[in-house]
Length: 140
Image 1 (tube, rainbow, N blue to C red):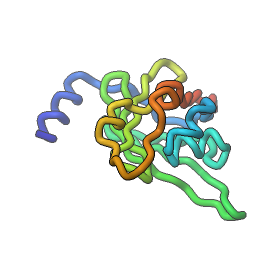
Image 2: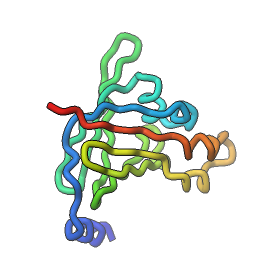
Image 3: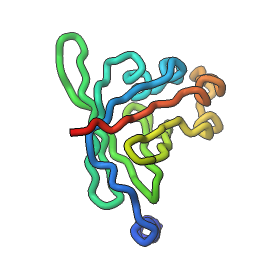
Image 4: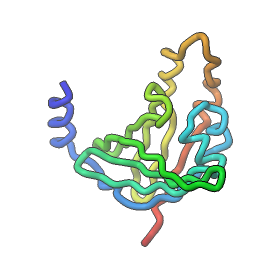
């Protein structure tokens, strides 16, 4: 199945999104229980460097916490003009990004609520639908 998906994506093509992006997130992203979106909203995670090999992408954020620097790496997939990846702390928390020239607009997939465990308070549908992370390409 994965091989078929790979062949399909290769035939359809993919955008080249390699580069450095300034990340901004709406206030709702701080309430959706995502380490990545919340970290961007709070300013803990900085600019995003994206590398790409075919349809495989890797997002890398630099972070500062307690006086220490570290990076957060997230694997993703680019197909046609869509970027898909999971939150680094919760693989069930998926994001979909729409790639346009110079910008990627990313939102959580609302279907994650369907599988949310009942023993943990889920984020609100309203906050999830208003959470938008915008990556604007930084010109080098």
